[in-house]
Length: 197
Image 1 (cartoon, rainbow, N blue to C red):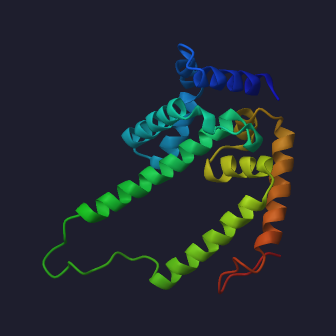
Image 2: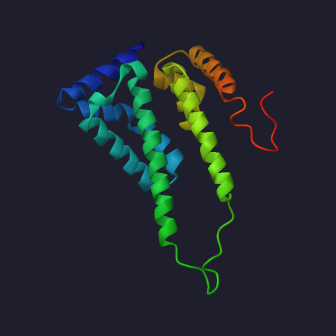
Image 3: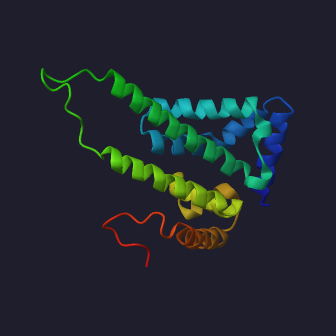
């Protein structure tokens, strides 16, 4: 475990024991990175700020939810930020859909172009297979992929967040992608597209 990872775990233990200024220390350490990720997902600044506030409030209320066996404190926090940001974007999209005024007379039933119900159902099935395959990966490989593909971080940033060498990140991601290809072969082949070679 790197010095940064040890310091992060120590700070989180201090938060758990309600040590004065412990949450402030954790916030100072991660807020910029958390906001950067939330902003990338949400685009909207205010929404990203709300997400970061929500995550740190959750850390304060339930620091015991951190499981060291599943990854570093940094990865845990960034994963929470990503999930909350995606949820916030979905909530905002739903709210906007329900508050958009109808178009001109006669336009009320014109639907925006997009995938039909059959494509949406297929996407849901594919997403389910991908989630199952990701869950089958070892925790350290899943952490690297989650941060890179869902968090939008570079491999160098993933190395910094996870507190591991860049070469280790590259190796974990390569192995994880190869394993995922094997697990998903035949499950995510879309009609008209070539399968994995």
